[in-house]
Image (cartoon, rainbow, N blue to C red):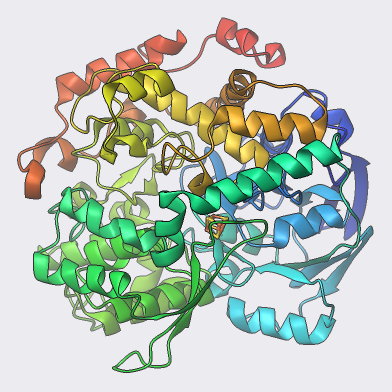
Amino acid sequence: MTQPFAIGGNILRVDLTKRAVTMEPTAALNAGFPAGMGVNNWLLLQETPLGKEPLDPDNPLIFTAGALVGTMAATACRMTISCKNVMTGGFGAASAGGNFAPELKYAGFDHIVVTGRATEPVYLDIVDGEVSIVDAEGLWGKTTWETEQALRARLDRPTLELLSIGPAGENMAAAACIIVSRTRSASRCGVGAAMGSKNLKAIAVSGSGTLQVAEPQAFMSESLAMQRYLMGVDTTKNLRNFGTGTSFEAWNSLGSIPVRNYQATQMAPDEADNIATAVKEKKYIDKGFGCFACPIMCSQYQRVKTGPHAGTRGEKIESQDYWDFAAKLGISDPAAVLALSGLCTQLGLDNTNATNPIAWALECFQRGLLTIEDTGGLELNWGDVAVVSELLSKIARREGIGDLLADGSLAGAKKLGRGSEAFAMHMKGQDLAEEMRVFKGWALAIAVAERGGTHTQGGPLTERMPLEPELSLERFGVPTAFDPTSYEHKAELVIYYQRFHNLLEIMGICFYATYWCGMQMMGPDETARLYSLATGEDKSGDELMAEGEKILYLQKAFKMRHTDFDRAADYPPERFMSEPATGPHAGERLERPDWDRLLDEYYGQRGWDLETGKPTAENFRAVGLPELA
Ligand code: SF4
């Protein structure tokens, strides 16, 4: 894959130990690897030294804007951030929308590779090709919103875009994220801690350049047609009207949400109705807006006007927020969820990696494994908003019980002991966001995800869509894509979505605009058409799916090089096998013999070793990575 068009043009390298800045053309690496996420993964693999802890200054932290980012391709706004995973020690990546990534390309850069550690806190200031490492005096200790406000006042440029960490990243809590464009969270894998370990508080960027596409007229016409088409689709209308929170009710009615640390899978009707009603009535919404080049606009400015959380303002609330705060922690007041989610954003905490350890602690307290002496006097009861708020602040600052929770539920359980590991809900050390008992393809994707515990690396939402078997066959080559509890053909379905999700990460396109959310949205062929017109490389959907597969092998190679994860690491927490679901799928759980067979099918489809779950040398050659064979 080469990409002479639609690129910023350069890789920016910043060594914070030496306070040195260098640049090199992106084109040389684009010749061998898919742009964006592909080059990021290759750089991460090549430049992460062996045997170092994830927060070692020598490890790189790499930012990229996807291949189509900055063009008019619908939703091409996303940034991917890669590092050695702070929670698992393996492959790590997080992604976010907003406006930062397009601005980075307009400034002339496709990637930023940060290594080393500054002696004092600093931020990067990028204005076109000029890059400064600036002392972050007065910013360290501030929340992400305070940081953004201070930098906007200090830099005072009309096109300024920012990303930053909060106190959680500064204190290197593994639950730390990076906040992009004020409220977009690049979450999971501890990317915020990796940034904090470099004493890097923020990055500011302003670009005045333009991107060239290969066939301007055809690309503009195709892009505008796709934008117009997407605006009229029902999935878009639903997302624009209600945000992604609208899917919370559906997930709960299917009985597949993580209630009280996964002790149940469906919230009580009165609790869930509070949330569903607030979403449907748009109770806290002021008005909608979107990320760069997005016709969907699933984001909303939100405001709580009355009650104990009056004055709370937010800019985006996701169905994930309701899983994390409402389901997992037993908080049924939607205004409280909004307030707690906003607190996480300001502290620079990844909602999932912060709430899962809290849910673990609440269950440990419920079972007498944690006592009031351990918690510094806090009673840990389900649904206590004030206590959750205090715990979030303590996690971000590693204070008291917060230090036990800051690195995830597994790390906390290892320190606490007392049998508490049984209640740490994680995959490979990274906390879970998702319930896994009912939807079998969903469960498989989460279990085998290279970065650990995530549905955004192959999780098929088709299992909760009313798809006809014929359409399932036509789109995915399997007749069961819509069947939640069937194990049949789920390995093929997950492989399809792994490739597709990686393809979208290459492009920098938002998953919500695609087949992931609805069958009327963009698939591989539509994406390939836009890519071909933008770059001048004639690629089919299948060819781009093959590039998605190559990305997975780069991630796999990183994991094989830095961890000893094997087949055993692809088994879900025991709770999902021994404690059945509640709700409409009551009794459903993951059966071990079925899971054994599912893993065999998943590895077997690709010709991987069935005992270890690892690819062979021949597999690496077959996907075009002979140098890794
Ligand atoms: S659909 Fe939502 S998250 Fe995706 S690009 Fe649009 S506004 Fe951003």
